[in-house]
Image 1 (cartoon, helix red, strand yellow):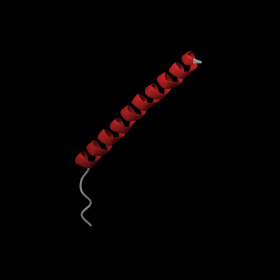
Image 2 (cartoon, rainbow, N blue to C red):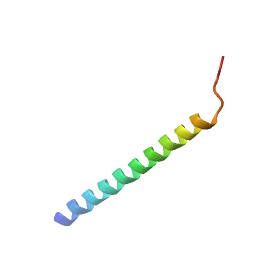
Image 3 (cartoon, helix red, strand yellow):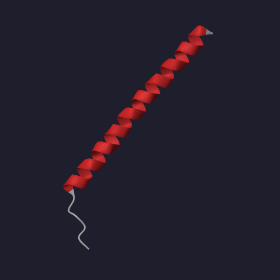
Image 4 (cartoon, rainbow, N blue to C red):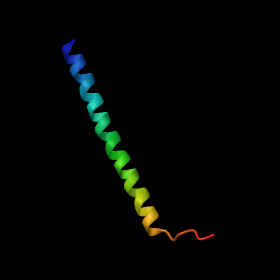
Length: 42
């Protein structure tokens, strides 16, 4: 029982780290896109 719980906590921890990395990557990509595209001056 304890091993299953520890395994589940580990999987959740890894998923949280991966989700954080993906979010940071998307945020950085959006920032670069905003910084490198010309402004829409309509």
